[in-house]
Amino acid sequence: MERGWENADLYYNLGNAYFRSHEIGQAIWAYNKGIQLFPRDIDIQQNLDISNSRILDRLVLPEPFFFLRVYRELKNNFTVQEFVMIGSLILFLEALLFMNFQFGWIRNIVVRKFIGILVIVAMVVHGIALDKFIQQKNARQGIIVDNGVEAYSGPFYGENAVLFRINEGTMADLYQSQEGWVEIMLIDGKTGWIPSDTIRLL
Image (cartoon, rainbow, N blue to C red):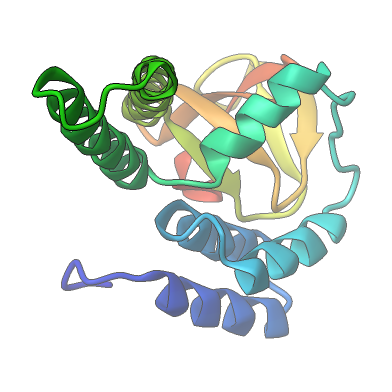
């Protein structure tokens, strides 16, 4: 990892080591890194689910609307590179069929409709790829790696009030940093400042 080399198996084994050491936050961080590289790895996902169940006072949001849930599951099951590859293969197949149709090798109304369907599918796939790329580019998320972290109203101790406490393993969005502090937002909308060494960036 220090040399910039990483893969899903490495993070899987690292997560297992953290889990056995009862470092739940670090384990969840490692499993999430593995999922980013290989979203469909069942073993990593199962271990991540087990680790998430160990989070104290875990925040759980209501189930999203059906179509939104399906879209999120589809988007999370593939990497950006995989979406681009799938979309490119569809476009290649579409080009072959179009050439056959234009040169008269295959003249069938079914083929023409199938080409139209492929155009729509390719647009959807590339749209999802773009959505995921923008999300990954703009998102700054991290995992709390200490237990009982206090979130303050400002980026320093003293007069700032403690707004809430967070347990290790909780995921948070990062907004800005300042001299050893970082402003975070939890999935329930709570915001506060925590020491930067209590959260590990994904």
